[in-house]
Image (cartoon, rainbow over all chains, first blue to last red; front, side):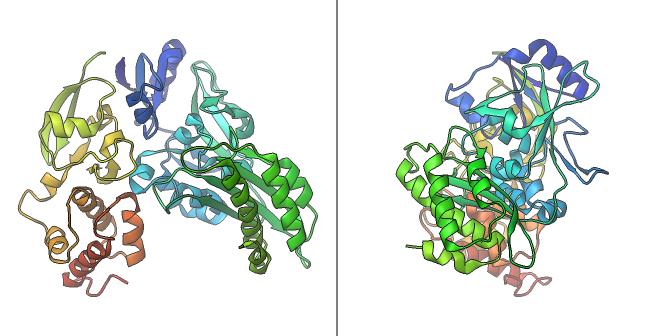
Length: 295
Length: 162
């Protein structure tokens, strides 16, 4: 194995074009270095991306209202960015729950989605916001773009071609919504999610009809995902306790959690029902709706 | 394995080391430079005992690629207290913020990083910054008291820990 530091985007993409199939791209390395030490992955080369410039290294509002986040932006940068806090608060919240400050300083949004852990904290809010992934490669004048929901396909498995690098994640301009990311763990930091849930709701006036709803989970399936069945059930409805119960049951029944050392499948299903009620109550600014779920 | 040669700054001195490509910074600090103040607690980035500063940012050295510190400034607890114990270190001792001491260097480095970028943090901000440093002994109360006493003693920020 060799350690190589890419000096430019061109250097990196040229390297990946010829050596990508046996190269591990390295951003913050907070998961890759652990996997290497445990022999869970191997490569002929570690390609450090830390010196790459635009678009990897910046958060850029687009004229369209979309927000392009460079793949090398750290969790800490995302957690503290005022534009993200204002327009995509569930993403800022999620970034602040990844590990501790030490993990957030080194780890990146690109690493989080490319590592594709089933418990990746940034995935549920990114999916709820309809994020797209941009991939660059040598010889391509424009990036390849695909929906994040199509990019991550399995545990530690993505649609990134070995010759490609993820350069940015684009969040489409969204209307006025209220968004949350809720994470359940044994402690409040340095924790891998036992259950993660992002919910986005647009509430119409005057009766609070949920005109648009997005629900996305992590740590309860092989991949983080949008749960369209629950979204369809909720869309166009005025929230009430009975609806939240029905939605919680549907969400819980439709996921496929496993038993692992952090929690059992049964615990995860139980928690998920309550978590959805809390999330919806918060997004709809009706805290009383969640009170019945606290037994 | 192709050995890499890395030039960097360690505790304000130019240094260099050779290492295998998958080496982590923790092992370079302890085994190559014999700076054993940085501790190995978990080797998976979950306890913070190995916290050091890289270009002023507190990171877990046990999962930080050694190759990634080329041309960077790395600071360990030995560097921070090169001229004697800092006011924060003295306060940790005075306020019972140290029992077994194993987590202490990591906590010193995290707080050093915090106070450089945020000289007057609230108690909530201090506790949040420390949430990546696991202390099994003190319950954090003495640690927080130590930070409070350092801020109180500073002429610029009396009673700053809100």
